[in-house]
Image (cartoon, rainbow, N blue to C red; front, side, top):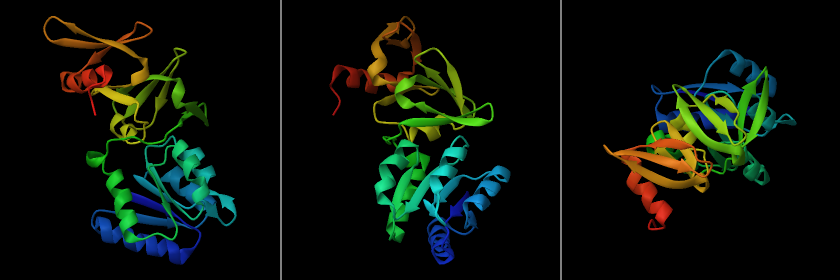
Length: 236
């Protein structure tokens, strides 16, 4: 795992690195430290990473500038900051977790558990998706999404107005961030529950989800029972 720590206080950065290596194991991670916004931007433009640990106050510059400019890349972000008043905004931009300062080892352990795809069930507070378009970053409100469709290592964002944008994360990674009202119906599809009208069962055991606009999407047998219970109000 390749991790970038962006923290302007060198002792704090080294302490975070020590915790990261202790929790994840020296053989399992490669950790780089950048102490400035400019250094972090240069590093991210040249090297791929899996996880960004980001402070928000970088010598008076806003760490959110880094988050907004590079959020379209395929890494996840955990904010580590004393600016707890910025936590809600951070989740709106799709960060995986917000660790307040002063931090401790156990809090980092919880954050890394969220990073583990196998143990995450989503339920984030994401309100915007950042996509790169014609050399700039556009923010797509999550409320504009009709459904997500997996496309290899990317995700197609199908919007209510009929447009389609490409998101540079896998469907599994996106699942960690989406609000709880988004439900996976197939290995390749995630849909807001509010847009589902009904379920159709066809001969041969084929299932489909019918949206209120009449559009039909495949429903996997593995997700059928859970979705039926949710729509009927039988789930806990």
